[in-house]
Image 1 (cartoon, rainbow, N blue to C red):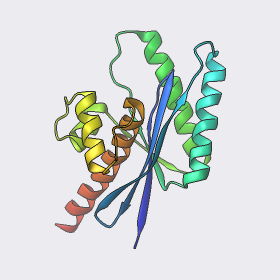
Image 2 (image 1 turned 180 degrees about the vertical axis):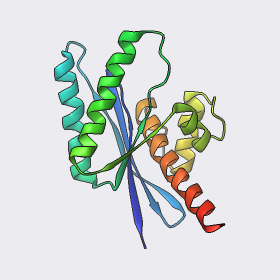
Image 3 (image 1 turned 90 degrees about the vertical axis):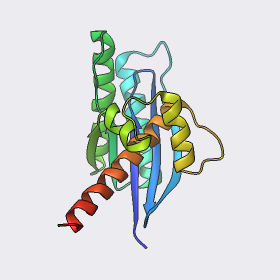
Length: 167
């Protein structure tokens, strides 16, 4: 039985969520999830190091096959967008340094793949992640978003495989 393990990442400047989802045949299985929390008074370099080190630990511990990360979307505040861009860049660097391929998905694509509606709320996404992975309880928004990114990637791969086989 082939196992395909995806590390989903929801990058943030104060909290970066991560989640491991495995595909075994047609089933989705929860590996683990969590948050890398940045201390409020940390400098930008300290924050980025904490994200990098935290993701490296997850990658070593869980041995994912690939990483899927949430793509940037429109922000009114340029400073917020810039900080988020730094966090995304560090997450991608952690994956690339571990020889993982990286796939990026927009929030709209993620919600569409998980909930079936691209404008779903965070709570709707969180509840659907709980159901899809048969979790005993709802996990934090950041970890849930990361699990949703991983589910989105697996569903995207399934769709591409189905389209290829139908030709």
